[in-house]
Length: 576
Image (cartoon, rainbow, N blue to C red):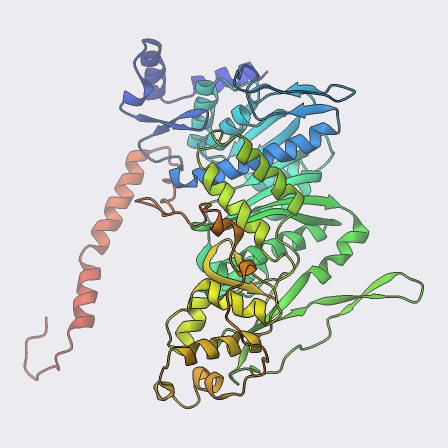
């Protein structure tokens, strides 16, 4: 039936694709064809139309690489229970020597070969099918992959790339609305997927409700969101409508964005007696990406409120506190029950500068990562550095995640603190050494340079910043009376031990080892334009764009000229 489906779809391809296939049969390189360009990534080689009818972004290679690394470890964990060993390398790789000294040797499965006992994967928004093709060729222990898209031209591209890469025994193309398709698959374990990947253009929230139902218990849900302007506080009303959380605008917004997304996924899962376990959460480039296990358990799902918290943050000095949504208390019989969070933890005004506090959230306040899972991914990436193009960057990211304080949500940014006091930003190790010498823990956040994640209260942070300000011999009169900076610099310090002598634990081990942590971005870096509208009549679509351009031609310039003309009007002057 699969063969008939492929033949039927190939028969429906545009004439130029059939011409391309015919020309390819004559050994002409595909990349030289007029209507297509050939793109190689990992072990996949795909054909992309020059017309941009199907979305593709080369900058997202890191996204796809870390997905392959994460799903590989998930597949290993799932198959070892069936006495099957999934390995990253190819069966005919002569550079690999394996020794199995176990009492019962395990059967090995390799990338690129279907495994009947393996995992099933749904790429709900597949576009060109590149990710599905790479998963089929690079992840071991895969039984089936469904590459779905609602766009007809995208499905044609998926079919084309499946055939071009010879993975039709693993990957199947499907044309359907992603939400409806996942709702169809939610009934019956045999219809659900072990892994569901959501990588939309913008927010993933429209797909979460169906995704948490279509993934099997103990399954893996991979979610990307690129609407960072919404998640980072530019549009709090839009963020609440989509994620049911209010973001606070701060330089530490990227970690808050991750926690907003995790909290949103948890809320969707709780409606169906499910709950999540974050394995890996990354803020990188212009998007956030999370990998979470979805568990089933009505009793444990009730603990969700204890993992959520509101954020109370001063808009002037960036001091923040967390207010748990609920607390867990012990009963007289030794059990546990939930009670509403006790608070508020602080007053209406900031304890440090006296300015007003804002309330954001709720956000996910539990750990962002599973340390054991991070260890496995890091070991694999280190052992096989040539397997993924962005291995060095993945290694740097995972290493920084392992160094983070897992029980401390959110962080400060030293250059933001310095700008409030109008002082030079102190060296990272100097400020962190001061925190350690004061008796507190400190680390960085993987997604932000100059980040300071610590369990020290805001008063300690600002006492240290005040001491650093005094070392620079700056003038207090530069700060207006009533400003946050003036209040901070004139208040009495309450921290007894202020000492900036260097401490080894204040400097990250990854930095000492010279591991790539914040790489320089290449040219033309950033999000790409959305794929063109899927219209049956391309000429009609182009005409619409031309008419729209003609309609607004010159109006923007006229508006700009009007706004910049500041001359007073003179009576009798010819107004044009």
